[in-house]
Structures are given as structure tokens and as C-alpha cells.
Length: 381
Image (cartoon, rainbow, N blue to C red):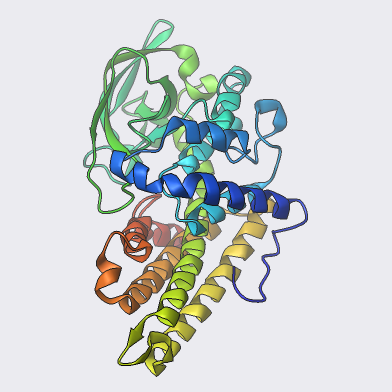
């Protein structure tokens, strides 16, 4: 997407996949974005279509319903959706939950959930954040109390992506209130169960096409086989082991967003005239866009380095955290500078650059605030 640059992870296997994803996203998903913005969620038919395309769990083994690919295939999906401006389909959450199950679930849980997630039949959510807890997982108050061969879950969650549309939610709850990090467990909860209740759809600054909601668990009773992995106290380590997966998706989104912002701004400044000449013909425009292009290329090469580490199984938590905080901050800077060239039109929601400006702001918060990422990297020094 940058002149004369080719990402090394786009090999002969990934390129045809990325090309097919690009056509599908551009032709079938992007035209629906306005409708999704109005209803604050994507439609189920698009989830099923994305599943049929192999866009959900592309790096999960075929025997569990995935496409048997690598993280490079995930990178292709995230990049193409971002570049096309498709924000309503929260596939990344299903990728994360799918990998919770793949890495830590029982064989029965893998067989039950993964094929349905990959097909788009089951839409996932992660119920981790609670009012007042933020990034402090050990402060979680939601409880899961064992009663015979069942668990009774009580508590509330907020900022849940796919909250209104999800069929299954991975709920982080305390099974041992005195156990600290070792007292956390994850439960795979069918949202049709009694005691599960969805709250209101939250009114966000951006990402209007994607639903974010509150959730409540009022004596929600689940069978013991809903406990991820079948062993209590493994929730924290599962979350920690899979955080690099989540953060890489955010980092890739940021890199692709910079490329999209640059392309949109180049098109606009070549066409828009001020004082009798194109906006691009002003020296300030060219100098600023030169800086933006250099930042975008540097960000792409850094991101590609991390993707290669990911594909090779060498990506560690510190690297993923660096990618998450550095790339999201560069994306915020780039999109902000690009918006300036659009003048008042850039502040209108009908222009993609304005939407991108609000969307990129939250990437420095979700997936672990960037201050937390710096702390994690600092501990590795």
C-alpha cells in the first residue's frame, strides 16, 4: 500500500488470500458501513459471509473449523478491513476468544465452539472490564461460586464490544476471592442462559458501526464444563498469554489506518483548490505530507517486523506492547495532521478522515492503556 514497498509476510500463500479478502470487503462489507452506523451494529448475514470467506479464525487448524493459516492471514484480514474503512464487524474479538479456547480449552470446548466461531454462526465477546476497575484485573468483583456441578455468576461488566449481538461471552470472574491473580477464571457463557442480561448500548465518540454494551449476571447459572480448561484459577495466565495476540491486531490496525489516512489526504489535496492552486502545491502541504509518508513507512516496517516475529512464533509480550503503544500513537498523530488538510470538512462525519480521527483515539486506551504497555516494556528492561 506504499510505493515500491512489499511486506515480507505477504508471501505466495497470503497474497491470494489478501486479494480475495480485499475484493469481498470492498464490494460486500464497505457499502454496509452506513447502515451499521445507523443501527450501531453489523448484521448477522455479514458475519456468516465473513466466516464463509475464511476471515474468522484463519490461523486456527482445519480440524477445529479454521483455515489452517498463520498469523499472517490474520494480519491480512485486519489490514484489508482497516484500509477499506470497515469498522462494524468486530472479528478481532472472535479471534481473541477463539485463541483463548484453542490455547487453554478442553478438547470438548474446542470441538463445541471453534467451528461455530469460525463460520460466523457464533459471535463472541469478552467480558473483562468492570465499572471502576479499568486495567486492574485483580480488582474484578464478578464472582463465580461453585454449587455442585454448576457455577453461579454474579456481577456486571462494561465496555463490551459485540455486547448486543454476541452469542457467547468469555466472562472473567473470581472463583477464589482471596487468590489474587490465581483466583481468576474464565467462563464460556451462552448468552441465552437465564440470569444473563444485556445493558444499554453505550454512546461512544467513535466506532459508531460497532456495538459496545454493558452486561449483567444475576445468578447466571452455568454448567461446570463452561469453565475454560476445566481448571479454576487459570484465567489470569490465559489472558496474559493471549494479550500479544490482541495487541498485534491493534498494532496492525494502526499501521493500516496511517496508510489509509495518507491515501485519502493525497487524493483530497490533489483535487481541492485554495487561492487558485491545489492544496498539494503549497510547500507546507508537501513538507507535512513528506513527514507523514516517512512516519507511515517507518511504522509499516516496524509492524512488519513484529508480524514476522508473530508468524515465526517468536513474538513476546514486550514486543507486542511496544507495537501497540508506539503504532497507535503514531497513528493518532498522522490522522490528526491529515484531518487538518480537509479543513471544516474533516470535522464532518460524512468524511472518512473525521471518523478515523475519533476511531484512532480509543486505540491508545483499549487492549490495555498505553501507559500500562510502557510499564510492561519497562519491566523487561
